[in-house]
Length: 283
Ligand SMILES: [Zn+2]
Image (cartoon, rainbow, N blue to C red):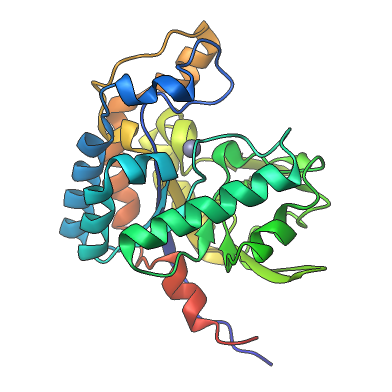
């Protein structure tokens, strides 16, 4: 029997700018991004400071666009011991795209990041966790593009079924093209309910006291896998105009993030996805 390496926590950042929000109309088209003042460094410098203080190495899913505009940020992350992974070139949802377009995105962003950081890029995360029935080629394409692991599964969504058995535990996914390791985002199970609580809008929405209790419930059985964005460490970033519901979801309790992260980062030990993957050996 293969002994599983121990895991405690994984801290991940999707390195994108404040206007990289999905499903909202009126966002600037890609051709105009160069004219917008970037805020990504403000949030990232705060994460770097926090992670240094806690002596934690994180996995950073960089947008290719952000990395090409801010290569110094990628190099700084490497100097600090963090892992570089890919969040695609231009923050496009995978749903609704074809196999070829996704293959190019996965391949080009990997190459660009590797050229800047000088290291092998092993991991991928889809913008908006947007995979499912309509993207049956998803895992095969990542394997073809040379990725070793993925972290695009938020196991509260039924749409992921068929692609992945919706396990809460990291593990290999077998496909016709080979196998790839999956690190699902942490969710809390209460009866039949699964609730996301450790990332993005969910981390902002749920109160500190509840997150404090639930982190132990996850850690009893699974690793604690957290995902955040630079905008959450930069509460003064410009707001995008959107309807009230989306506004609530995108901006609620922005100021509460820092204290919640302090709490979660003190709860356990952390390592990068890449370091964990390397401990698996050749299965
Ligand atoms: Zn994203």
